[in-house]
Length: 376
Ligand code: F6P
Image (tube, rainbow, N blue to C red; front, side):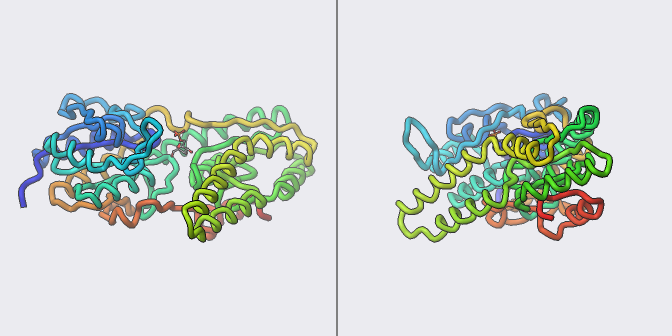
């Protein structure tokens, strides 16, 4: 087999701290240890479609370990369903041509669930690809964790720490809405670390009355304030039932028309979900008699320098990624397993989401210390 001489690296999906550390890890190992030239692909998969690249030489890789975001830029485009001028086209063949034009022997794609789906679909077109798990959500399947998560966990925890001040000064309910898309890892971790009194995650549909009862009990016990950590994807039981029914209709759809109808229904439910944290806040005010205020942490959780843990993880996975490329092990994601890193098939990761299991130790410890999870 011929030696790998030149690879492209892209970052796709939501940005996060640690992305540049990962690009640096792959790049320095590929260049320095294996003599592989590295090309940066701009703005995720869009750069492959538009053929937009930048050199990733020693100079470009220097000084980026601690820099937030991604020096390459990112996007959320899906090559198999590229929306342009109102049309949807599969542009994967153009990507294959552009990889050939740039003399790329392989691709390294760094991203979350959607990126792994895109990578899998490009591997089906014959491209040699290795991926790495990136996201603050920590919801990438088959890996212990993803870089970006530890930094975001620290940011969200510090925010909860700070919100305690105003909660007990004003005897208020303070609700912190935390990112995580449709998984509860970030909210659960930050809620426990920040000592939230209530933690609501997508995996456990909540009942407002039970939350209100827990807050009233705290108040009657001499703590007339509460911190609620709510995942942006957390659902009431009623909402969860509506989503479940719509998903079932989509999975049972036998015609394109039925599938489109079910998809439209899910999109509408997503739109209705917007603002649910504010509605929860006013509902809790009514049920407890306490004032309630909302802080949406949003993109602050994705900003700034990566934590030491994320730098270490990104560098560790990046160096293994370069090794797998050198050994021509393709179609795999570099999965973190304890202190080790193992290749797992991209097809087993793509379009899957790692959710918080009902018996997870984090849930057990939260219940043990009396945290209300909205279901009891
Ligand atoms: O996947 C990371 C994430 O921050 C999610 O937690 C959040 O729901 C989503 O990205 C926001 O997407 P965008 O950056 O496209 O607004």
